[in-house]
Length: 291
Ligand SMILES: [Zn+2]
Picture: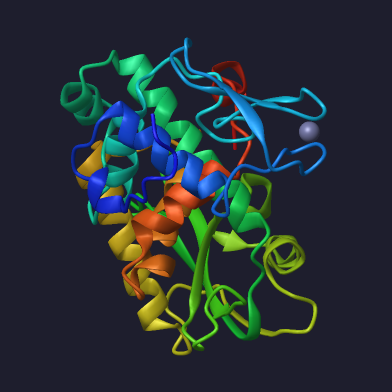
C-alpha cells in the first residue's frame, strides 16, 4: 500500500476500495506525512498483516492506528461501508438504519449503531459551537396533533430553533441549532423561563444578544425559523416514519448539521473530518442515552 499516492474524495464516493479508504484516512490523519502522536518522530514501521495497518514509531515504539480517536475506532465494519454511510448522512434526505442496512448489506443493529455513532459525534461537535452576535430563538413543536387540545399530547415534543452567527460561518451566514425543551420546563404548552435560561446557558455565547419568542400565535413569531422547524419535522417523518423522544435530539442535530454545512457544498468532507476527530461512543453508551 502506497501512502504517498494522493487521493481525493472522488476515489471514495460513491464507491471506493478498502485500500483507497485507508490511504485517504492516512492523508487526513497525517497530511504532511507520518508523525508519531507521542514524540512527533517522522519515521515509522508499518505492519500490514492486519486488516488495517499499524504504524510503529521508529524512535519511541508507540503504535498508532488510523482509527484511534475516531468514530470508526474498534469497528469491524469495512471502511467502504462506513464511507457509504457518511455519504448517505450527508445527502439531503439522510438515511434510515433500515435503508442503510439494505444498501451496505449489514444487520439492522450494525447500521443503526453506525448512524447513531455519526449522529452523536455531530451532537458533540455542536455543543462546542455557541451562537454569537444577534441571536433569534423561536419555540416550535415536533408532532403537534392537528386538533391539539389544551393538554399537550405525549407524542409532541417542543424544541427551540435558534439562529445566530458562529465562528464556523465566517462569511456571516447564520448557524442554526434545534434543541429539545425539557419536559419539566413545559406546562400546558407554556414554555417556562427555565427553558430559556437553559438554552441561553448551553447554546449562546455570553457576548450575544438573544431574542426569544415562545408563544405560538405571537405576532413577533419568527417565520423563517418556524419554517426550518417544519422542514426538520417533515424530514423526520418521511425518512424515519416518525420518531419518539429518545434520541430525537441527535436527529435534530443531524438536520441542522446539513443546513450549517451545505452553504459551501462541503457537508460530506466536513462530516468525514468530524468523524475522524471525534471519539466514538460504544453501543452500550448509545442505547443508554435518553432525553
Ligand atoms: Zn514516537
